[in-house]
Length: 130
Image 1: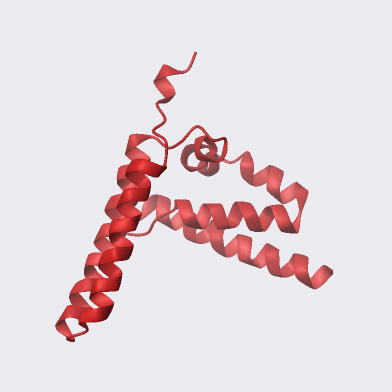
Image 2: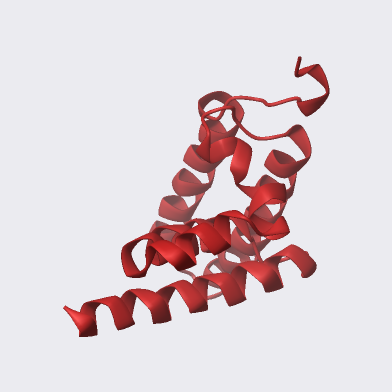
């Protein structure tokens, strides 16, 4: 049991580190890594889970989404823009190499990503809270 908790802890720390970098670097998404950290810390230790949900990084990027309220327009656009830039880079590199089928698959994944964030994730406006 102890090894399992250590693996979850290490995975949480990696997610937290990448999420913190993603909050600063424009091309690295922070939300997926912070969600990984949240899940991993929850599995490793209740104390770590409580600490992480109290951080400013969590409150600014994930709290409203985890509570079922949705994401702010700015957060959605940041995620969509970052993923679009990263996928466009991969798309161009594969197209240069003549890999047409992987380009089609990546384009489909990109389209699903856009549709999910536009229609699947609720828009949250913190200014309209009562």
